[in-house]
Length: 264
Image (cartoon, rainbow, N blue to C red):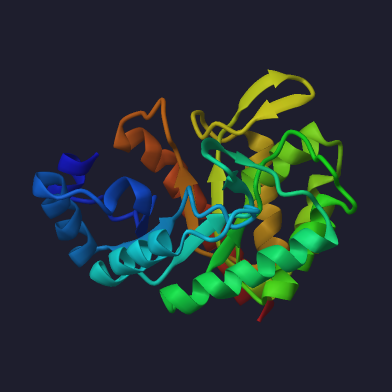
């Protein structure tokens, strides 16, 4: 999409999101093209390898490199997954942090450490997960406890709520309603893969399905409209096709705003 968007960006796209790990070491043509885009359009960063829940010491140099990248491109929003991907080595999978009180304290301290370095808020995303080893509390209790203890903002992933609700047999709407409105910074919405009736895999490689759209609509009802990112990581169709879903996101937002005006 890089060449395409350097020629022009559809007006329905209000912001882009990138993983800093994929861009902060690039120079040459790609680096120049990326800089040209960040000078004209708003960008958010959504990290992949901070490993906020890792038992290993925080990779301070990595965090400093992220800060330099954010500063260079004047990016204010930096979010990461409430998970871990490193210990004695580094993995390419996002693993669930044990849902324990000790882990809540551990993550909260690391959030503050990161924020001191990046001089920005660190926004945490509720993640999809497929097992909960060592859990002493529910996912809902763990997520809300981390947000409160770390006093940080949230990236609310609507599709992850749906995927987890199927895989772990809970009510997606009740989970959504319990999220702290005042901590929500922005939203993710995406498609996923149905491995079986009781197993959904969070792939970001398919169209959004109706139950997830309905959950997004409910999110507006209970929490309000927020900047919303359409995630599509592979099986990427033409931009004109992606714009159908982006415009549907706008439709939901506009409907909510119109509803508020009617009530006023």
